Image (cartoon, rainbow, N blue to C red; front, top):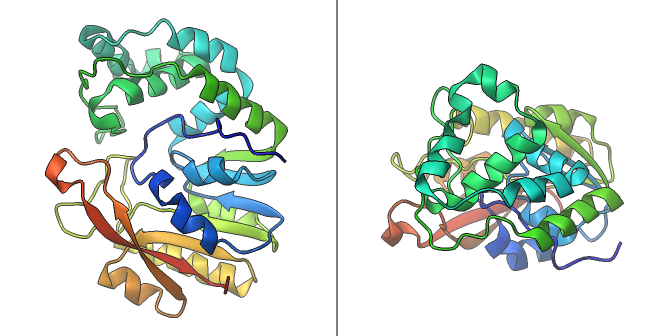
Length: 279
């Protein structure tokens, strides 16, 4: 299937891989029948390689709803986004939709998707963050001219979703990993093991992703390996992660931390890419 350069992330997401694509793609296996990404996030890898067959999952149901709406209702989504203003008062009105759970549940899927895209484009630093009640709580960003309606990209992504055979699911990553078969290449980009006690980001979804979850994920990687399924995993280069995956091939890479409330802390950090195959 011919690749379209306009197919690109529609959301800025914590841990996005756009800046690492030139490093990651040469490490992919040479051939595979289908692609699986259980922690899709902003989808930079998916949109870059544009596989014909893919299994796409994320625990964040709001995010998967955005992708479903782009696939099925892109025209209505674009028209709704055109009505949204880069204004502080308007921003907080839209942000507070989820404070009334009954009212929020009455919204259409398109309205919910437009809200997430709008907030992502206009909130401070493009940071998707929820509180313990699951309510979006990033403040207004005060940007002069945010690109709230990137119509060419939205239409290109919608076209790709409709041409390809993509299965969207939302839930724990284990559900999608249990059902894939040999010949599928799995790219795992989970919430990272924190490099310090102050760097842990848990606002992406309720509950967080601690060391116990990292250990559980490693066990699933072992199961994939035993089933002959090729996987690649990205994570931070902490001693804990290096120890967990010491029996696999580990490649160190440098990535720029793009989302941080302190500008001086948006520097290069070491990450690892773990694979269970030889390129």
